[in-house]
Length: 242
Image 1 (cartoon, rainbow, N blue to C red):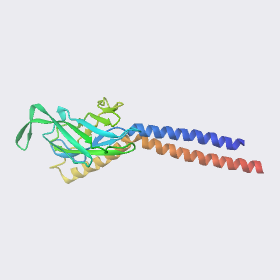
Image 2 (image 1 turned 90 degrees about the horizontal axis):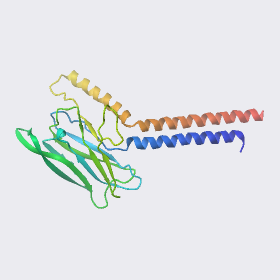
Image 3 (image 1 turned 180 degrees about the horizontal axis):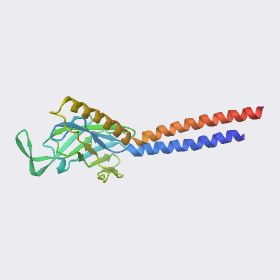
Image 4 (image 1 turned 60 degrees about the horizontal axis):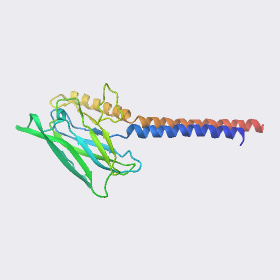
């Protein structure tokens, strides 16, 4: 192989290796269960959604077990029906009753479990969303929901580790950020809060998908590198020809 072509082959191989590594990092960085809401606020009612990607290459996700700690207890909680899945609710007693529309609640839903019907589930390379609706939400900034993901090969992925000092563990529990209520405020305050929520959502999207950014940069570097090598090769051929 002529020397210029050999250099092209070596550089392209190196760039492709970096690209593959970036794809692996992107997959690993985003493959965990997360929870989010657009309307859940302290003292209010809202809908929360758990996003569950399948991180296995061979097995399907057939179960999801969501634990609701007592500090995240809701007086009212319902599941959104999903075709191909069955939801089961487990209750636990409360040491301190909750109040809901003037009624004293002495127990709450402590575990929500979704099970796939026969032939259903989340196949490799897919994801699914599971939604709950309820309230009132506790007076807190964040709520943690330890979650276990079940596969049809008998394995489990336990997303139960707490985030400490902003450091995300290897298997983080889904954390819900509660929005500040803007009821009763001025229109200007509402607009400001909405703008802040938009900015936060954009920042969260970037923060939650570092792999996507790495993948984009790797592809850009690959294309730039190939273009540079091709231009250099052409220049070398012109030099040799002349």
